[in-house]
Length: 278
Ligand SMILES: [Zn+2]
Ligand SMILES: [Zn+2]
Ligand SMILES: [Zn+2]
Figure (cartoon, helix red, strand yellow):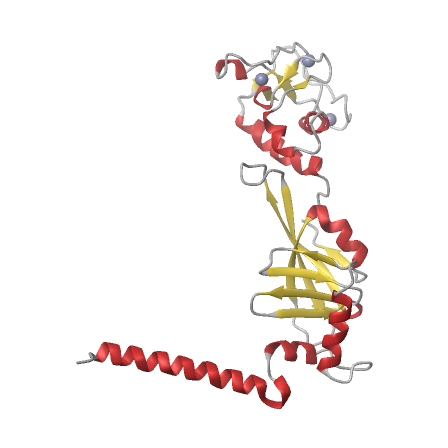
């Protein structure tokens, strides 16, 4: 005996199967004219292209060139060829002609140095709009370090939202990690009678960092030395100095290494950097 539950299950599975075939047959009519990819291609049919097949072969030819820009994971790949901007996802292909599109940097996401990502990264989200009403707008993601390469390949105008700052070097990205780490350290209270002076690195802001050998309490074998300098550097300048003294090829070691104090050369680690308060 077959229960009603199983009968319903069988009917639903057969219906899904049938639906799948109906969809495939619908797509394949008139030489696959109704398939989603051929529809995306049809949006770009106009001279010199007479049909979507000719658009497809133009994309094909340019895609084979080695100078195309390509980025992203296999499930959401962004490709820029001489005249096309493409995004290839698992189920869809988005496309826009370079000569018809304009690009806006809409968002930036920062990923701090962490055990799973060996170097700090900034991911930019770009919206690609086309003046062609038949082409849908779409979003692509790029790493900020690839941004200059993208700009070289992309001839369309790029606009940036006011609140997006693009960090193109690892040192600039590292500054945010440095600052976040220092915020976790205890602060240093300025002795009464002492005043903060402008940072000697940039002369733009007050020097607000002090090196105190705090790491000793956690790890008695620490190689850090006490620095007796008064606060002379702002946090950004100290962070830049810290980054500049590192092995540039191995950003994953930066947080754990020691560098000399820019003034007295006493070695310090990131745990020893304190923000000065009054
Ligand atoms: Zn400074
Ligand atoms: Zn010092
Ligand atoms: Zn230390």
